[in-house]
Image 1 (cartoon, helix red, strand yellow):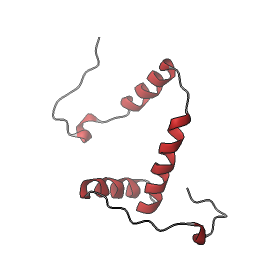
Image 2: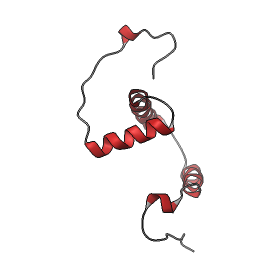
Image 3: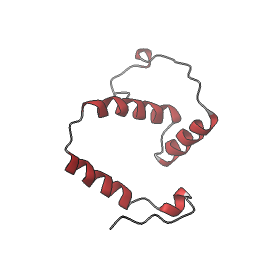
Length: 87
């Protein structure tokens, strides 16, 4: 991500071809996060490299996943069917 003291000259211009559907997702995420598409792309790319070095136990992962899925509104995902947790 761009640091406060980083100059514009330290950045590299890169042309990337992005499928239309992916671009729409990036645009929507950027709008939701109130930032530019460029900032959204950089944030996500930077985070993808950070995930490679995280050590987490299975129990910790389950807690994180449970919290994330608890907040998902299935209607917004437009799955067309209701998913219920296994008993």
